[in-house]
Length: 167
Image (cartoon, rainbow, N blue to C red; front, side, top):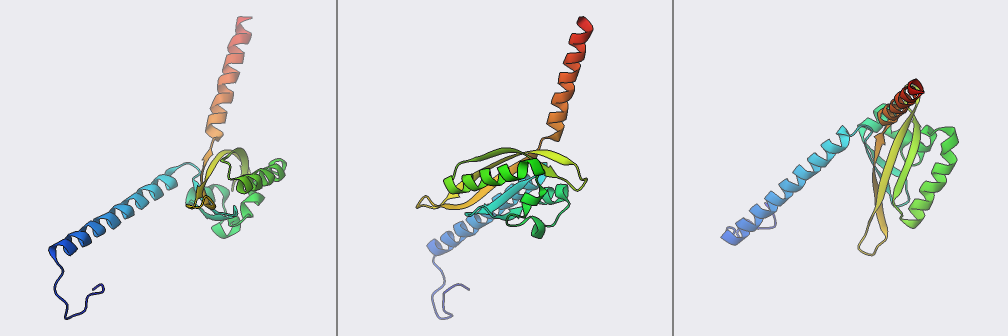
């Protein structure tokens, strides 16, 4: 019922119009949230959110399915354990530097999937800032680029085979 008492006058036309605009705006926000969530869940590998300190607070189901892990297992800095051993230390250093400086995150990573194979993933992220320019949180996307790399390698092999056949 809002803040109106039982004895108050009914809302004016102006108040009703303002309440209708507010309800429509809230509904539109809800629709946009649904759209972005659906987009995020449809990306092959997904989206993620970290707090200002760089600790993972959300990742889409697609990420969890590829890794074969629960959110609790990858939350915070748990995702480091899924990285290829040759990449882990450099990736952690680079991420910490990004978090410290606020620079955009762009990196090709290798994640161990539930199939025990390492999947090349292009990770991109950006800091979202408060009005005072401090970092509020990080948002990003990860793309499993296995298919693209495989296609590229096949094209190179085909070109090499054609060049060898011409000689």
